[in-house]
Image 1 (cartoon, one colour):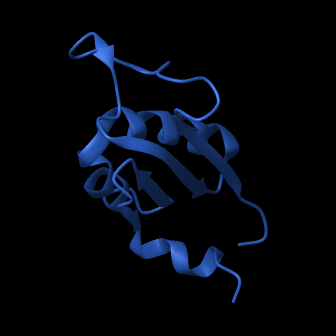
Image 2 (image 1 turned 30 degrees about the vertical axis):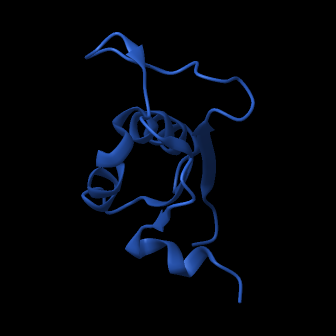
Length: 91
């Protein structure tokens, strides 16, 4: 785990700018942001946007990708982190 990339997708800086192509409107549902960690900055940038677009389905999607770890925040205060996030957290 010497090198890794970190990317966040969400609404805080640019508002509702990610569109779910399946429905043609804003993506993410009630998700405010998701941060994804993995071995490649390019891969985690793509993964963060993809996961954000999936909204409530982001967690199972992230868990199916062994090279990714993530943390998400929702507008109701709910949060989750993937099982693989622990090695990246400083105690």
